[in-house]
Length: 364
Image (cartoon, rainbow, N blue to C red; front, side, top):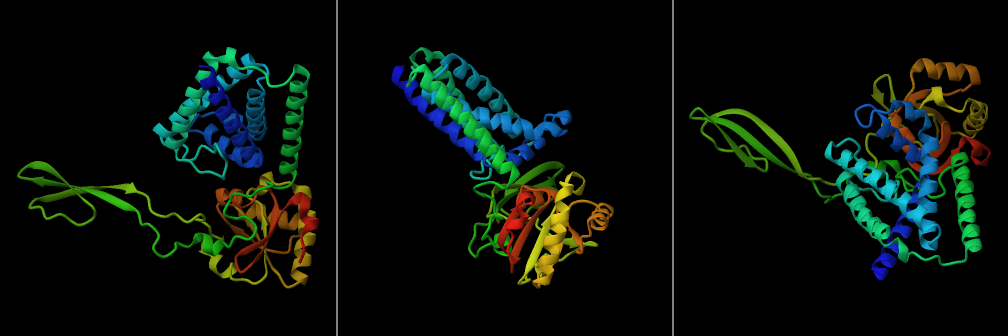
């Protein structure tokens, strides 16, 4: 039992630290995932939505600290009980999400590792088993350091997490795992390479033959059945290749200008997924940056999921000399974790991406 506890202690501690740090690198992204869980039709807790960012920061810091405390063997009773309560909650959450197909990605490892709902649930079940080993064998969890050193290391870890969270929230994630990172080409991210796996479908054809229903299953061809066709049910049994970037459009008055704009040699995108929730003080700097970009020969556009009325009001108030196009809110949130933010592109390749606090770092 002693050695099993040691193995479980290392695996659980390391996994909690890695998972927590990945999400701590992008707490804004994790807060968007929490908003999905809080929405009607999932957990139906809309009153928690405004608190999603704060909850996400606290949760990921707690996740990291519990991993550190477990490896140190510090406060084992408190640590193991906390781990057990946390993993029981997340196991229930991932099962609920998988069984009812509510949230397609749990966000357990942020954008670094994508897991299907059932993969997330399986991962949590394995962790639950390991945490139960720790729970029943907690007498074997001995501290690695003396109490004073444990307090120092634990406190240093907590301080480091808080400072790191503050940094990424006021700038951008230190490591960008998304398909819109600097150096990525949006057109290439939307394309399907030659020879990529295609989805495989199964078709259940329903006929009436001699007064009775008959179901014939095929992989696509219409079956040769001497009877009256009723309907067909299509099931995807194997997913095909899905490009990392999809549902990307730049629309105005119902027309998509993405292909045309992404072919520009010099393009500046001012992104504000929701103008009603934007950091308004930043638009004065945005206006200056846009003017400077235009003087250097750049085409400047705005991208938002807000209405034309909101866009025109912002343009008028802050003197923004460019038009806003419509893009899906989720897509804009994925592109950059800042509202507003600025991207600089060359023929669809992202060359610069800055938070509104770092607009002065742009080079044109």
